[in-house]
Every structure is written in C-alpha cells, then in structure tokens.
Figure (cartoon, rainbow, N blue to C red):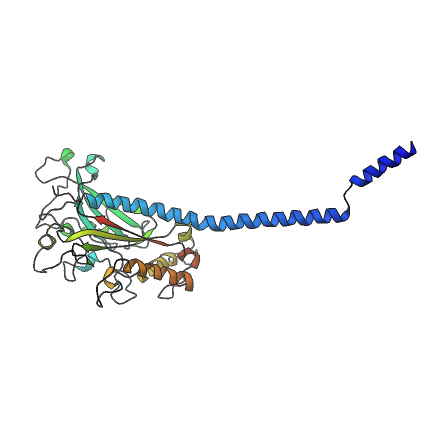
Length: 350
C-alpha cells in the first residue's frame, strides 16, 4: 500500500506545472496576443484608406456616369444655345466659375449648361417627366450657409419642344436662338448666392465633389479651353460652335473628398473654417487655362490632373494650403482626382 501511495503521489507531482513553465506560458501567450494585435492594427490601417477610396470611387463613378448620360444626349444643333467655357470676352467670364484667385489667373470651378434629351421634371405637372431638359452643372460656391455649399449640383429643368402642346400647361418650352440660356434661365448660369442663382430644380449630385473642371479634346488632337479651332467674337456661340464640329470629346475632371475626411476639417470653435480650408485647397487646383504647358508649347493630356494631385500632395505634406490655411494631412491624403473623356460623336442631332 505504501508503495502504491508513493507512486500515485509521484505521478501527481510529475503532471503539475512548475513556476518556470508557467512563466514561459505567460510570455508565449503575451507574444501571441501582441502579434495578433499588430495584425489587427495593420489590417485596420490598410482597410481604412481602402474604405475611403471606395467612398470616393463610388461617388466619382455615379457623378461621371450621370454626366456621360447627359452629355451623350446633348442636343447637337446649330439653332440652340450652350453655356460653355469659351474665349475671354465671350458673353461673360462666368463659364469659368469664379474662385479665390490665389494664383494669377485662377478662377475656380467651371459651370456648364446645355439642352439634353434626358427626362426632366417640372413642378406644375406634379413631377411628371418631360421628354428633354435644360441640364446645368456647378459646384455651389454662392453662399457659405447653403447646405450644398462646395458640393456638386445638377439641374434638370423639364422642357418641351416649341410648338408642342405641353401637358398640364408646363411653363417652359425649349427656346431656340437668338434667345440664350442665361437670358431665359439665369439660375443655370449664376453661382453667386443671389436670387438669380437659386433654383429648386438643382439637386446635390456629388456631396463630396468640391472641384469641377472641363476642357475640350478637339479633332485636330489638341486639348483646349476653346471649343472651336477658330472663334469669332462678333458671331454667336452657336455659329462658332457649329454643333461642336471641332470637338471630339469633353474631358471632365473632379476632386472628391470622402465624408470621414471632410469631417476632419470641422472645428466647432470656428465653424466657417472647414469651408474656408476646402475652398482654399480647391483654389490651389489650377483652372485649365493655367494648366502646365499653356503659353510655352502644346498642352498635354494629364497636365491638369497632375497639377491637382500636386496641390493635394503639398497639403498632405505641409499641413496647409497655398494661403497657409490649416489643412489636416490625413484629410488631404484621402482626396482623389478623377477624370473621364465624354465622347461627343454620339451626341443627339434631332
């Protein structure tokens, strides 16, 4: 019996953990936890920018797809008006949207308005669609108190052809030259916060798009801010354009910031500063007429986009914009630049 009791006690002693073994186990467990934490942190670090890119990619795709549809059904005619980017002295400089002018010649986001065979809506009909519309795009820069300030807006104003019996007494038939868009619908061409720039038909299509620019790829291979190879200021827009006969495509460039990064710009002690910061960064992005290469040789595809990316990179590196406005590097590094060439060969000619 004594031998058996001693053997059992010895076996029990043999299977117990020593203090050294316990310490080793704790160290190993701590290392495993540390390793798992590092993996999780690394994954989160990688996933966070990826999620931001998904946000900006998604918004850019929606905006550019909508523009492609509107531009693809634009009326390609010589007897209708267009409100477009054109040479200095053409009507007024508003087609080059005015900006902060932090750099010589800087004028800010563009505006554009044209007729398109896409459905629009008119209030008097109770929201029924029309067969065509007046389409306008702008980044709202008229009033800092507006809910859509520094956001991309689209207007689709329902119209009908002249001479067509308008159902429900729709008030807006389409008009032909010599009547112009800015004379008939000033809200399509103004962006100054005045009554002339306010219209309930505007909707925010790109809430994170704070910069919008476009230029022309002409059929001679050049990229310019003038849509005709020759332009006579004594003649009308329609005559000079000749139904966009010299234009192969319109290139659209937008700058997008994701919602999380936009929130980083907010400081409750200075509630207007976020918009000042974003406006300042947008003003650092050159207007197309100031793109690299102008005045010293042929403009090159990608110059404008490269300059915008440089402005964003500078803000992310220095933590401020050109006018020394504070700009969080984390917010700047999340901004993305997108472009698309919208082919005009498929434009409607009805």
